[in-house]
Amino acid sequence: MTSRIIVVEPFDLVVFGGAGDLAYRKLLPALFRRHVDGQLPTDARVFGASRREMSDDAYRAKTAEALAQYAPEASKDDALRHAFLQRLHFVSVDAGSDRGWDALKERLNPDEGRCRAFYLAVGPELFGTICKRIGAHGLAGSGARVVIEKPIGHDLDSARQVNADVGSVFSERQIYRIDHYLGKETVQNLMALRFGNALFEPLWNSAHVDHVQITVAETIGVEGRGGYYDTSGALRDMVQNHMMQLLCLVAMETPAALDADAVRDEKIKVLRALAPIDETNIEEFTVRGQYREAPGPDGPMASYHDDVGNADSATESFVAVKANIDNWRWSGTPFYLRTGKRLPAHASEIVVAFRSIPHSIFGAGTGAIEDNRLVIRLQPDEGVRLWLMIKDPGPGGMRLRYVPLDMSFAEAFGVPSPDAYERLLLDVIRGNQTLFMRRDEVEAAWAWIDPIAAAWAASGVPPRPYPAGTWGPAGAISLIERDGRTWHGELE
Ligand code: BG6
Image (cartoon, rainbow, N blue to C red):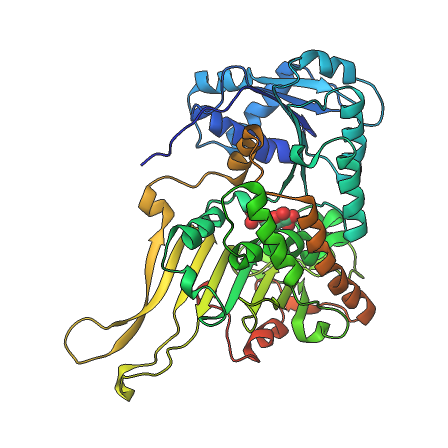
């Protein structure tokens, strides 16, 4: 089964940081896959921009290498690849001065109303400067839009500053704040499941849902990003954005329509209803950890301290949080979040755990009755499982078994899910902001995160150690077990 391909309108996409890691690893391969599927019109062009000098041909050659490495499955067809590479150009532009800006302007299509997207794949300290130059050179007209990605600030104040800088040139309608988790197929499927089926919504509240778990587990360590990661940590790197977005999509009320503001209006209500966690309750509701060296399947795994080259670092590589949402729908249903690096599995999932049946009619010999769980797997092997009790087949009387109704998207549809950037980049071109974060959302998320970070800092207690390759410190287990619940077993 193949999906429907709708060709997007012509565009000029300028990628600042066009010769950087994100561009080669994610953005250009994503565009290439869309090209292979025939979704890019003939006059769609991509401009790599950075301070360095590079010819168009050199850029195309570097990109060809990147495609071979990061999108080898997309196409072996030389003509297709060649046609894609012809869309690419390179311009040398200095964010800190006027050098190169006129040349960039000359190469872009002069039509103001045509889609002209600026992707800032650069450090956040350059967001404001680049936007101001885009504006000053008359490039921020009606068809222009700008894409930025986390970190959008380090806390509420700095996020407000980034938003103000970018907002001084572009209107909110022109700003696309990427959270790549929102581009993941299963995350969008969460909305399809919730709002395209009559089955779940009547049960989607604290009367029927006992609790929700969201796990984003990674096996990798900090992978050469130690400099950035050590100033960020799991709370800022994963919870403030990806995990809170997932929580919002699970918890939000039904939007009136699937349009950007209707969805984002509902998400922000969830963020604002989150019960504060601060120095008064930090111990009760959070656990943070940091990995230590341990033997691994491919040889010894270094400690976090060695990975970031800072023996005194008190930055967390793991965090677990019990979040409560103080509203009518969710009061009494906690959301347990956990994420970390150097965990035993690369796996992300959302578990909606339903309440127990009120009374069992089955006798003692039938086996334990487990509670229903809806498990939405984001990666790997995206899919949905609904855990149910059924009768053990065959003779032998009534014995019950806990089994999943299992749907793997790859098996069911026979096509791999597209990378999040494929969807998100084309949404930028189409002008669809539904899967992007609005300014007030980003700020509301920081407003909840800041007191947690401040309480940790004030406590002076370092993160608890856990051996690399395990599920975080023991405290993460007690965080949920002291409530009489357990982390969902499938991952373990
Ligand atoms: C990024 C974080 O936003 O998400 C990384 O900065 C993390 O630290 C990554 O590894 C995880 O994304 P994914 O799509 O691999 O789950």
